[in-house]
Image 1 (spheres, rainbow, N blue to C red):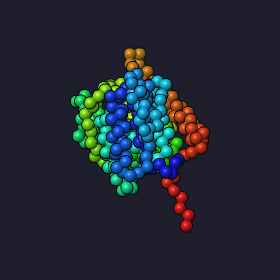
Image 2 (cartoon, helix red, strand yellow; image 1 turned 135 degrees about the vertical axis):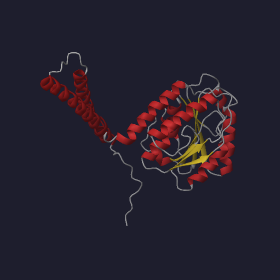
Image 3 (cartoon, rainbow, N blue to C red; image 1 turned 60 degrees about the vertical axis):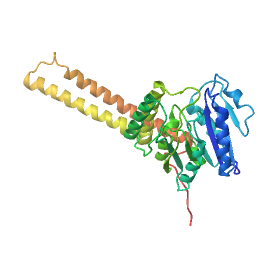
Image 4 (tube, helix red, strand yellow; image 1 turned 180 degrees about the horizontal axis):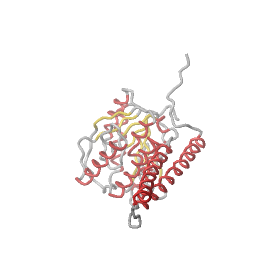
Length: 312
């Protein structure tokens, strides 16, 4: 990492030709006011309009061009891996995030946070977008149980060390504070401005909402059972098998002692079905346990994060 660079501002772009030059200007002015060394990184996520052409002549700027559209999370991943600053600032490229709020994030970070997430407490979005966002926030609080009000806000500040060994997939960038909190990093939040979109069109739709929900479930599983999948699948399998065995014993007793006809009963099939599903879940849990152990072995890491070692 270049020790002379304090801030890296990472912004993914997709068909934002109407915003990109004004966005660069505002980021440049905001960073200059802070008086810290900085770099600006734009990632063109396979734009089909004149976004790349509009970036020509902008300075300072590091422009990463994707061969095609890979998605916002992939763009964030590429930009963060290219960043050299001590603190990484992420934000959207649609001018709805205000670069002047970077200073607020940095001030909040001085309180000892490793991550500071923006909270768009007065959102300037359509009703449908806010509806889906609030539903996702509710599910996130139930599954992940983090303390962030607005995980979907891209305006965030991270210490560079947070991304050591971290790769972004799916819509994972939305849940990075939760992922990092599970690893032991301190996550804070600050209210930020939010402006209506004045150029271009939103990229958020129902497909991204579904992908986000799937990733949320993945993070829930990874946070609670990643290092012990046998507890989830094996425990569920034993429970189902136990219920299935009870049903079969009940049916056998009814047949032997009470001469109950079972030909028209569904319970024997239900008992066999539960036992088979239970055995399969248990075996799956064993296989997942082996895979997880091999995963950590191949990465030469463990399922914990050491902050520091003090020798006195």
